[in-house]
Amino acid sequence: MKSVEEKNEEFVLNILHDIKSPILSIKIALENLENKGAASSQNELLSEIYKVNRHNLEYIENLMENYSLKKGKYQIKEEYFNILNIINEEIFALKLLIIEKNIKLNLVCSNEVININSDKQMIRQVFLNLLTNAVKYSPNFEEVKIEVSKNKKYVSICVTNTVLNSNAEKSTGFGQGIIKDALLNLNGKISHTKNKNKICFYVDLPV
Image (cartoon, rainbow, N blue to C red; front, side):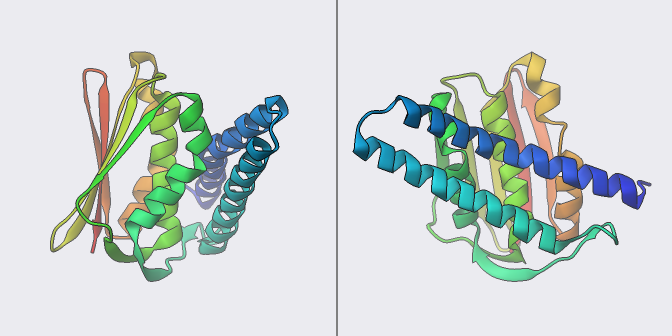
């Protein structure tokens, strides 16, 4: 069993991992801003930078508030929310990186609203981690597919992306322990499969 110190260290490292790609998106935007001459393009990029940076700050503040470093465990705060909003927010946080890598992101869902009663910040962390890995480890010009469905008991989400063999272990490794623990606390579960060069992560969350 992991000690409190080990859990705290893993938690902090996971936060750093999760916000690295959104910060990279800001870096890309700043580089583009430096190379753009048109005022309209500059204003658009500045707006993107502001929104992504605000998202990162809210993510860190809320996550740290919900986690007790002294106790070494999550402090669950349940609320009713639309999970598609969370997924779209995390997609936005990675938007500039997605554009930079020419990733086609395909969100497939038959409904516009899928509400669950859960901890919003924990769910946010789960999908930021999954989408960060999917975008980061996918080769350029590939597709990341997110499928969302709902039955009477669960909301099921499948995140599928192409991964090179050299990155397969990395894409399934860092952060998965924290995510698994978080989902267990939320009465959810996560698993993954790999078929040739496709890797799929499956998340089930109680309605």
